[in-house]
Amino acid sequence: MSALEIAGTILGVLGVGLMIRQSIWGWPVGLVQVSLYAWIFFEARLYSDSILQLIFIGLQGYGWWHWHQARRDPARVAPELPVTRLSVPAAVTLGLGGLVATAGWGEFMRRSTDAALPHWDAFILMFSVAAQWLQARKILECWLGWIIVNVVAVGVYWTKDLRLTAGLYLVFLGLAVWGWRAWRASLAVEREAGHA
Image 1 (tube, helix red, strand yellow):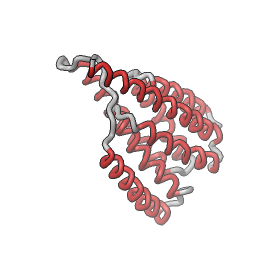
Image 2 (cartoon, helix red, strand yellow):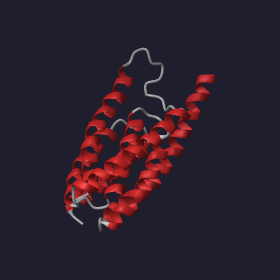
Image 3 (cartoon, one colour):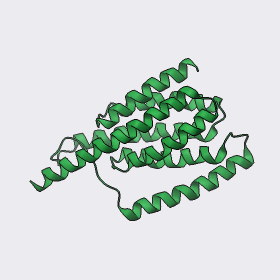
């Protein structure tokens, strides 16, 4: 356990807590957290996870910008970006695409690197990117994606002796369930307000 892992853990919990509350400040906190974890995962030879953190830097920036733009739009009635839902065809396409991408990237990493757990690491990469994109777009199903990713991540990080990180992802799992419930309630309130 390193000082970077401790700092990343604290910032991770804080960032997800802010996301659950739909606070735009979750994005800059997340930017710092994923920057720290890019290095942590690289040192643990979890290369797909390290690449994922670099992708997250871009997605965190995009999410911050997207949520901020919604606040500045004078045509919007509500000051915040609303929670929306993913259509069933889009969810199926996203899921199947994620599995195909996982198989391809995992096999590439297995054959061309000394990556530890290349296919599981690839699963975390592909489905985290999908969940992060949905979160940036403020789509409710991002939390279901995070629930699945966090279950897999706990096992991978525990196996790689990143015990604090495994514990962090166990906390993230609980926060993802909380996030699902909170955003679903917010969606229901928004729909009720729309029908009023």
